[in-house]
Image (cartoon, rainbow, N blue to C red; front, side, top):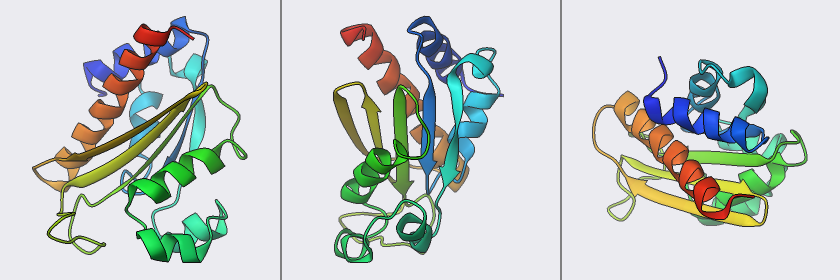
Length: 162
C-alpha cells in the first residue's frame, strides 16, 4: 500500500496532466512500484529503469565511467545525470532519479553515512536536488526517501503550477 503522500502526489500529477518516469538505483524499482499502486497510476506512470549497479548507469544511461568514478555511483552529481539522461528513454513531464546508501556496501564515508539518499527531480524548467540522511532499516530509509520525493513534487506543482 503506498503512503498517503504518494497517493496525493499521483493525484496532483494527474490534475496537472503530467506523467512521471523513474531512473532508480538505491530504490531498485520501489518508487515506480509505489506509484503503480495509486488510483491514478494509469494516467500518470510511464515507467522506470532500475540501474542498481554502477555498470548499468554507464551501459544503459550512458553516463561516462570516469564521471561515475569521480563522484561515486551514490552522489548528487550522478543522480542528476541519471535524471537528465532518463529523458532520452522515457518521455514524461516529470523525471525522477534516485541513488543512495540504504545499507552498507556502497561508497559510504563519515561525510556520507549509511542512510544517505540522493534524488533529483526534473519538472519542466525546474531541476530539484534532494540530499537527505534518513535513519532506520533499509526499507524504512527507502520509504522515507520515496515520501520525500512525493512531497517535493507536490510542493513544486503547487508553487509553480506548470
